[in-house]
Length: 606
Image 1 (cartoon, rainbow, N blue to C red):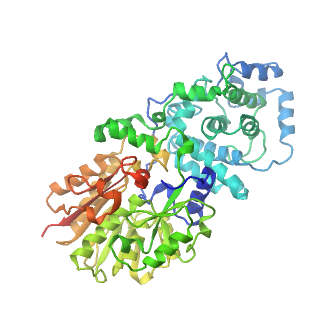
Image 2 (cartoon, helix red, strand yellow):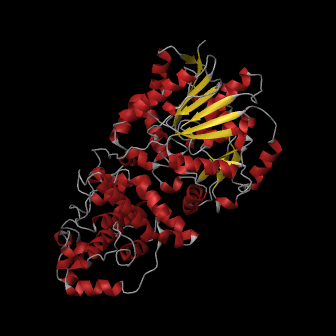
Image 3 (tube, rainbow, N blue to C red):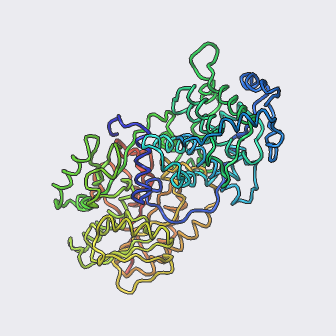
């Protein structure tokens, strides 16, 4: 692993800059354009609700000042703002009389609340109650994972924050997404009834952000309670609604009571009650859908599944080593054993800092430090962000064509199916092919693809970008090779996209698209042509099983990947079929944290 020293907020800030400034989303690891409209958290997750048990001494002590107990949230349902006492209302309005400045916590909570509400509304408001968490969130919170990040990036208040505050806001959202199952499990021990009314998503998000700080970020307890609760008082866009609305004082006191209960110490020890519950009542596996865990155990066995879970969901959030993998215009040449550009490559590694290192297949792993736009050769378009495992399909396709044509790629034409945001297209262009055709079905992602290629300053005569469904596209000239990184569940990217770990179990539509694309690519490939089928999925049914079905049809056969083609630890990922299967936590050394990926190389029969 790379040296420690970079803090997590810097990591999150760097990811944000890559995603928003470069239009290159690290969190998706260049996976495909398909995203299901809704997903559902596993049914065995505990229901997070937001009402204190009647035994919550801290909350009752704090709330009885108003003459009422807040062990019930009946008075905070829709329209119950009218029932709030004049005294409580006046206090609330007094605290928000002046426009408050946005904070890291306020924009993070707003993003999570907006995402939860939008997902709930798009699903028709069905399923479990919106205030619920892990299970109750099954109809409400699901696809809110990646959507919450987009909400954050689009928030005008977020854009006004200082870089350090942006980083903390991003960290808060990421931690809630990654640890949602455990956070809700802890909250489940303190509250027992879902809030309702127009503020329910805001309250839910506030409790989650507060708990995340206590459980995983080691934020001082006084700051957690004071600053997080204050979000409910400030008067700017922190709710899911377009219209800003005040939160009844009774509900504010309720949230305050929950967080105070979690932040108290246990039995004259220094251990927080929140951490006691975390250890006794939850497990990192609570953050992963049960059906997915069962699938991994079926496909890879219990021992390997444990390795996956430990890598993508470590018990200590602080043990995560922040890094970004870069692919350069020299990387493919290095993987082919060529010396062209090696001096420039080594100089770039030095300029990127002492935390940078070269990975076996030609990637550069950079310890996150500062604004990526200030990194060496950013303006020159020398590199792009791409997980090291995601480079393998492009490498093995290029290697096969390089060997077949005696090292001359200058007269060969290749196709990158499902190309956005452009990592593999950029690899193929940097390899020196005569022409690369990038096919992308989604127009928005296609726009991002074009912007990325523009930044990298590739010769526009060397490539075409086509907005079209891959299965409906046919070449007008001979194609020598096709790389098809099919739409998939993206479960191999769970360490950076925790939302995919809580998706619904029905992937039948994805399976149909994968089979359709694979068959079409085999059909349009000429005899002797090379095809690479790839996914960033950890599910065999999307990967190995699809290739087996394709091979059984008789049009193509496996062209085994050789250990010499993927130097370093990646050769250990080659299976008995000659296919590559990268599993997080399994490979040694720096490759242990690589994304889950699959690649099979095939050749069209004569």
